[in-house]
Amino acid sequence: MREFWIVFKHAFLSKAKAKSFYITTAIMVAAIFLFANFSKIIDTVQTITGGDETENRLYVVDESGELVGKLQAQLEVVGSDLKVEQAEDAEQVLMEKVTSEEIDAFLTVSVDEQNTIQATYTTMGLLDFSMPQRIQEALQSIQTEMKAEQLSLTGEQVQTLFTPIQFEQKNVSPSAKSEEELNQARVLVYVLMFVIYFSVIMYSSMIAMDVATEKSSRVMEILISSVSPVKHMFAKVLGIGSLGIVQIVIYGIAGFIALRTSATEVPGGVSDFFSLSDINGMTLAYAAIFFLLGYFLYATLAALLGSLVSRTEDVQQMIMPMTLLIVAAFLIAATGLGNPEIGYLKYASYFPFFAPLVMFLRVGMLDLPMWEPLLSIAIMVATIFLLGWFGARVYRGGVLMYGPSRSLKDLKKAIQLGKE
Image (cartoon, rainbow, N blue to C red; front, side):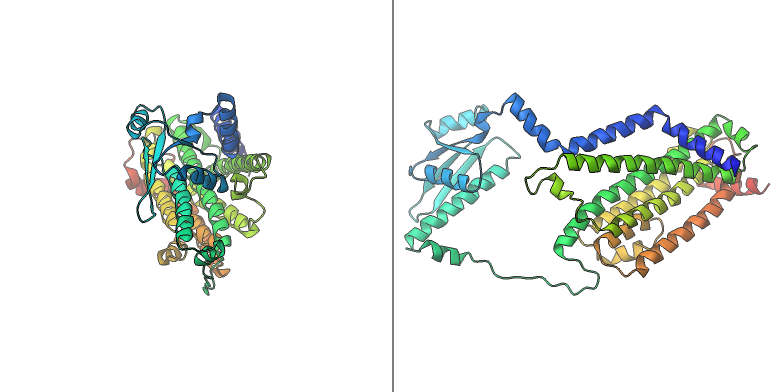
C-alpha cells in the first residue's frame, strides 16, 4: 500500500500546487461573489456614473389632454419610477429625435368615438419589451375605469367583474410534489446538475491527460517498475478525485458566504431565489452520492482510454466517446426539468452512464420510493467494479503501448499485452 499512497499523494499535490489550480479556483470564487452581488454592483455603478434621466422619462402626445395625468398616477400605483411628460413637440419631431437617439421612445394616445384608448409606442430599441408592457397594463387599467364610468358602475362592482375563480390543482401521483416544492427543488437540482456535469468532464479529462503525459515523457516506464499498473491507475483516480472534492467544497463555502453576505431585505431577490432554508437534506446527500459515483465511473473509463494513447494530442480524440456520453446524460436530464415524470427518464435513470444526472434529477424533484435510487446506485457500483476490473486489464498493457493510436481498436492489443 505504500506505493499506492505515494502515487496518490503525487497525483493530488502535483495538481494542487499547479498555478492553473489556484488561478481556476480564484476565478470561480470571484465569479460566485460577482454573481451573488451583481445587483448591488449595477446599483453602485449607476450611482457613481449617474443615470441618464431621459431613460426614465416618457414623452406623450395626448390629443385629449386627459390621459397624461391618469397614466402617471397609474404608473406610480404599480411602483414604476417612469416620469410621464406632455410632449411639446409634434409627433414628426419626436420621431426624428427617436431616430437620432436623442430620446428613447415616445407614446401617442387618443380616445376614439367608442371611448376606447388608441396608443402607439415608438422606439428604436429592438429588445424594448418590458416598458411597453408596463405602459399597456397601465393604460388597460385606465380603460377599465373609463368604461366603468361610462356604464355608471361603482368601484365595488368593477372589482366583482375581475374576481378570480377558486382553482386548485390536485395531483394524486404518489411521486408528485407541490408546485412550491417543485420550484425549489428545480433550482437546486439545476445548479447541482451543472456541478456534477462540469466536474465529471473536467476531472476525468485531467486523469486521461495526466496518464498520456506520463507515457509521452517515458516516466511511465519508471513508475510501473516500482508500482503495479493497477495500483497506479486507482491511486491516480482517487488522488485527482480528492482534489476535485476539495475544489468543490471551496466553491460551496464561497457560494454560502456570498449568498449570506449579499442578503437583502428586498423579497424575491437572488438570496431568496437560492435560499438555503428550505433545502432538503436528502437532496444534498443524493447529490454527493451521485457526484462521487459519477466521477469514479467516468474517471476509471478516462484512465483506461488515456492509457491507450502515447501523445497528449490524441487524448481528446480518444475520450470523445466518453464526453458524448456525459453530454447526452446532461441533455436528457435537462429535458426533465419541466416534467420529471417523462417516461424515458425512468429507463435512462437506470443506465449507469446516465444515472448520475438523470436519477439525481428524478430523486431531487419527485418523491420516489427508496428502492428506485438504491437500485440505480447498485447498478452504478456494479458497473464501476466491472469497469475497474476491465480497466485494470487494459491499463496494465496500455501503459506499455507506444506508437500512433488507432482509437478503440487498441483495446484488444492492450489486453493481450497485459497478459504477457
